[in-house]
Amino acid sequence: MDVLSERVWSVMTSLSKHFLGYLALFASALLPCHTVKAQSATIEVTTEKGSTPVYEPGDVMQVQVRVVNDTNLYCFYRQADGQVFRIFPNRYASNPRVSGGLQLQIPDSSMGFRFRFSTPLSLEAVRCYSSPSNLLQRLPEQIAALELSPLPGTSLADIENYLTNNPGEGFSSASVVIAVSGR
Image (cartoon, rainbow, N blue to C red; front, side, top):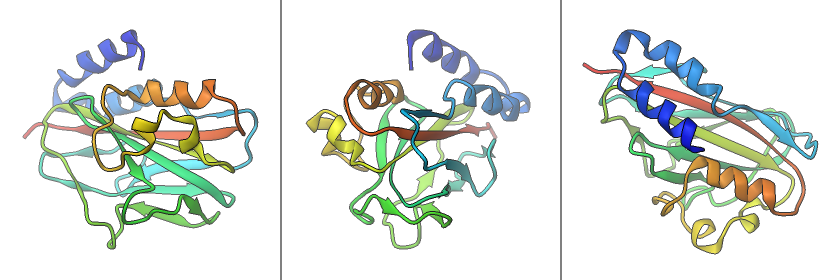
């Protein structure tokens, strides 16, 4: 995210629980869905609570991703403290190739991790990319090699810039912003 987006993100996380659902909808505009170089795989990212989810601290989330056509899928998670992780593919599901029309759940029952929220009054996000090519080849090696670990000094905007500014086939992307209320 650019500096303005980071500031907006920071201000929104300090607001009350009553407005978090609306804030998640607004924040999703900061992470718009788009296609670069006309790629055919349409992608949708939601959670089991829909496209503008609100969770409580302690809740567990499952991301749901659907693509129209067979494609390679890459998903990144931004937690409340700004750290970004690659969550798919990962050590439990190492093949980025997914079948069109099916819904992928991250994590599914075979994956050894869970998303459990701990920071009240915060916003988190998941951004996924689909492409016919291996998008990890466009990322710096120190970032591409890590999965389910913090990507040092990397934001979702950095990932987007690496993918957009390096040559290769096009990609589609979609995001879901997750609001965590206070108790």
